[in-house]
Image (tube, rainbow, N blue to C red; front, side, top):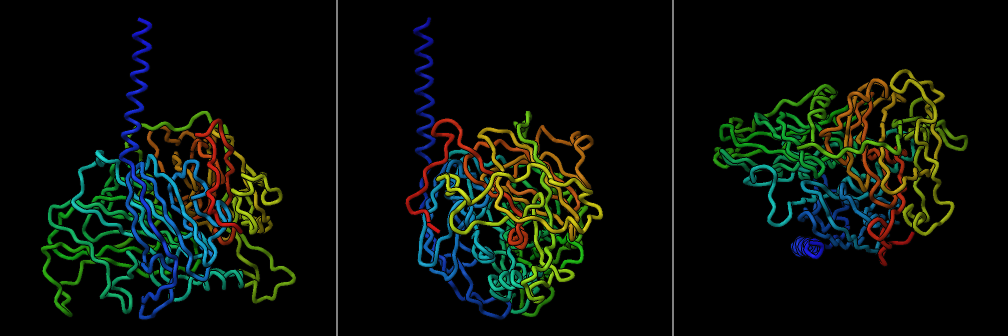
Length: 573
């Protein structure tokens, strides 16, 4: 009997090894070459020398299967430093490939190159990649499609066709000049001049209608739209005239399907939707415009459009208004009720393992601030409200990136003086976060402070918006992790009252949470990925001002719980 049991265990072991080998055999290594270069791009009647990948705007779409490895060699032929971030990819033990400048690597200098190598594991759906250096991601971005493993299928009927819908933001200027000017003056940067769908502004802008994006559909078809908000600074509503959208995934995790007529995506977020060709054959506008939750803040109030075109629709005759596409109605710019109803509709498809016995219970305030004008600054450099300079912070610390080493390099090599590990786990001062805040709390401290996590620790973070300067919906992105959003609400988070709202059964799994304006969100994750991981607001104006922090996750036990060695071609500062 004992011999038989031993034989069974050995046989099972061999069987599992064969299964694992077969699964790996189907996985591929996909190799790509990205050349970062200045390229003439004409939009809104004017040509700009925009920074692109391979001369394409948006950049190339990469398609992989769950389990594949990506090797992307990035050669920098532009005049700016650059890095590429693979937004939402878990990067298990490969933090060196994550991409945020001075966090996991030094930038790729002009003339330099670096190869990003990582495996996409346990994720399916839509992610994206973008520059993570200054404001280069205004034009340096593209789609990352992750299909199921070979022989596996979607958990919904296979769509007839799939179309990426990448929403962007366009300045009729050099975006780097825009952020540099704002940094000089201390004021808010100039708002963008257009939004785009797949790089095109659409029919409602000057000099744009001949290149408007057209998305084909046929009567009776069900198609998949992979919607991504790649805008730099603006949450966006998205809708299609006369058509319902069935949400089936977000941030490369499947969701319980639900139907809606409008999406809201914060920058960084992705949403996969099914659309059915169930309307009269014609041309229908897809449209996106701002969700603006900050009061009295200037913003781009224009509308970008693409055209959903039925193949059997009559051809549009020149100057014939009869075949003008049907225009959808969009929510009001400040329609927070629609945003709330949408975000609360997300659920995981089935019961999930939410971390319960919490080891680290953290409370982070997020918001803006105002720095007093330094005595040595001319007043032209203090053009924020009442002669101040705009800033932003988490737990009253405005994050400062190092310049001589990346944080990950300093951590891995034990280099002193680059960062401290005293980021506060709770708000240093308790106050009425969403009420009238004392002016004495408007000026944060600066620092390069990390929060240390033991490998395997179960983490809960309450992210609390504040009304300092103005409350706002903040899309908070955590690198290297997905997390469960177990609750969100308005006002000040109250653990006694609000813990009863926690969804510990089927909360959605995301990499970016839209923290409600004047409200809070609660996320949970297990710290199972060693490295230094940035957590920041994905409105780039806010990260420029310091709305960020980083977790330092220690190695666990053995090779599989340990950060890999840095690649030989890792750029040096």
